[in-house]
Image (cartoon, rainbow, N blue to C red; front, side):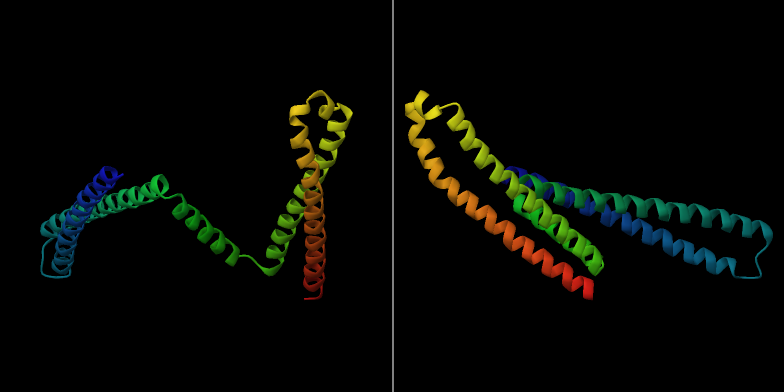
Length: 194
């Protein structure tokens, strides 16, 4: 990890130097462009000299653009290195970035759209709770139907523990469904009257 960090730091330092050089060259060409524009504003120059200055202006403008693009590419590579380094070494940092992007997305929504998102998330939670309840009930039904406690006495202890916990699962999921349903009803009533 230390070696990887050092390699990334060296690449960033190299790319920073490249970007700085490209920006310096872009500034140099920008100064030349400004000088050429000043010379072109002079009404005393002849047509051949004007054409020559226009060619130089075009060339220097293109060079300035090329160096700006190179600097931009170097900065983009630095950004990519920093972003990829975070994803390799720090999952939580990437998760925090995702949360910030999600918050920015939510800040662009209207109240109605946020209400729809809350309803969708609430319905997903209700559906997952119902699936959990069904799994508990059908699991117990299948254990009794296939008489697994009698056929496999070694796992009978686990089945007994499972039966004790299934009431907790059922109660937990029923409470989640009730609380979430009440919350969604109140939220929708408030939004209806707003």
